[in-house]
Image (cartoon, rainbow, N blue to C red; front, top):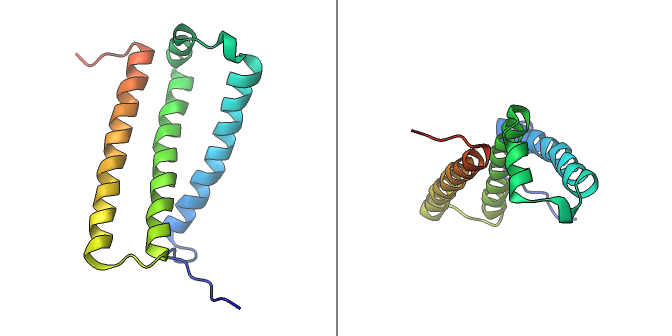
Length: 123
């Protein structure tokens, strides 16, 4: 029988955050599919309608939280998959900080996009 290996420490903080973000993403994705595929059909979705939804503080906040959560969950999963494959030393450090930088760029650009849709300007 193969030995189980995981870079997550069972019961550790990152292990717990990965599970919490997975549960949150399932709920938000269900909401997204329900709202944008059953309540509003594809032919009804437009930039103007998206902008109107983003002007609602609850929806805007949920989408920002979705962006941050999905980014963390995805990047943390990729990083730990690489560590599980044997990534160590300097390569591990370079990959970690590259993923942190990419995540930061993704979140900043996502917030900028959400702000544009919501009509929020930074003056």
